[in-house]
Length: 442
Image (spheres, rainbow, N blue to C red):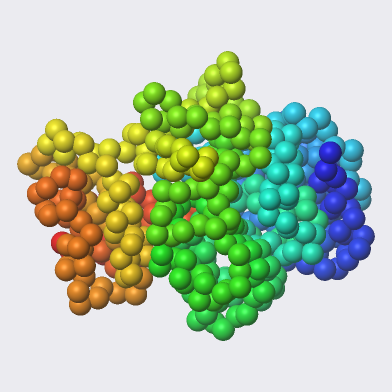
């Protein structure tokens, strides 16, 4: 059994009470102050506590206190923005099987879902990750994303459990990134690849040096442009990507990702079993999964079947060497005039272009065929002169399925999910309302 959160927090606060424990763009907490807030939250915790997700100095102590005190936290815009009361000692941890978090998924691939987590599953995942990635209490861990992105609360708690200092940056802007990079000097960064690219660019533009030695990326594909931007700023950092879902936590790790082959997501984390159902969807049996999904009437719905398998929406296949390859979501195909267009291979083809930072293919209304497949591009730094010819080299000819009907380059601010990947639903709505800037490329 690995040491519990309370023991590691207490030890870190005793060894360096004035050292930064939590760094945010809006201020920091020393290790001693953070420990006192967590201790107070653990002792004051009700069965459930609603907390605003805006300030990590508020929500993270409440969440960590819930893990220790046996209460659950729900992130809610109507919840409290008040820090927990100050406590003087960390209580003996409650039963690890008691729910500690009700997290609402972002809904980027469907309707938002409320998932119930307990401390035991995350403790098991902490132990497996600690073995696989070699993190230590001496690390300083920067977590990118809002707490609705399931990686954010996981990684922040993972850093506290490790006894490491943690930084939380919900939104990457030059000023906010500079404040956290300078205040924390991170050695480890967790986040989605598009947001890590933004962080790297901010660090470069503001000439902020950070001793990043490891990057842990997930929630979206790592594209060649993103990988190059990260490598340009932190050339010695080891990059690990992972595949997972809000309901399963980690499924695979890839310690040597190849951005040119985004379908390869690596091998299952220790303890995880994967299988492919008859319809091609991925099935996962894991000790790191959420307990259940909360229903609209406050009840609970099991995520796994009687044998412990959770069926995900992603289609997958296994290689002969046991690696997992993702083939796209089963529910993402776009019906264009009766023919199904698979957006995943098209987006991946576009992301191989050296001027495309990220891409998505979405359904948009079409007067002639009800809906059309439209490719959305985020250019790395503007459109090159050969943009149209380069598109022709990687896409089928227009009118030949599965070619997109149109290609749009998003040239202004781009809507993103809580984790930082493209918010396809918001982008489609913005384009329909003419509130988003876009250029027709092909």
